[in-house]
Amino acid sequence: NAGVMQNPRHLVRRRGQEARLRCSPMKGHSHVYWYRQLPEEGLKFMVYLQKENIIDESGMPKERFSAEFPKEGPSILRIQQVVRGDSAAYFCASSRQSGGGETQYFGPGTRLLVL
Amino acid sequence: EDQVTQSPEALRLQEGESSSLNCSYTVSGLRGLFWYRQDPGKGPEFLFTLYSAGEEKEKERLKATLTKKESFLHITAPKPEDSATYLCAVINTNAGKSTFGDGTTLTVKP
Image (cartoon, rainbow over all chains, first blue to last red; front, top):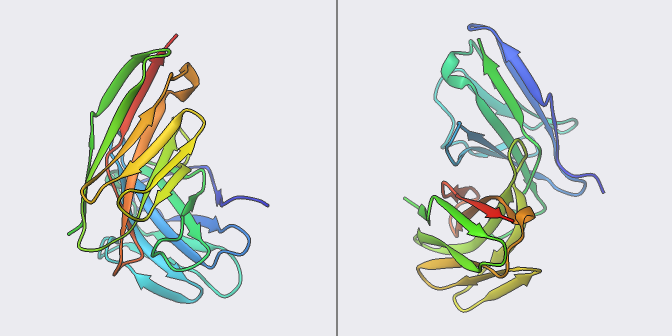
């Protein structure tokens, strides 16, 4: 049973470009979460999605960031007009049921570097 | 707002020297407390879930315990391969998101 998959593993963008990060949850999981980890810092929640629905986006920056989890295909975290401060590791996690109590399993992360 | 504080920030042990990591939390209603291990350049790896005060879980050299205000991760006779950053997280009964602590980086010297 494959774990959470994320791609690309490493992404380099120049300031002003767009970054698209993809996440495929574990088989049987319908809940997806995105977290950001800055160097030497802990994981910060960004957004919680179910298929075709955003459940909680309280951790998402108000501008330039968006997320979706379509009926078919992976979840996408999109960052428009990237800035150097967006450089970080972005982790996706998935769970079987709702976030309350069900364990979240993490992918390997996408490391974004903005030049 | 939910808060998780882990201590110490860094811990250096000799192989075989047992110790404990602390996770103090403030949450309006605890749905679950989670421990993860994270190796450099990798995603967090799930270790334990604890749901109620008094609960304990064990796995090899690791044992996690939970009270109403904190959780401990006890490491018995650690080995160099236990070196990693250990993360603690809580989920509120009213939310799906996890709140993570900043982690404890454990180094075990042979």
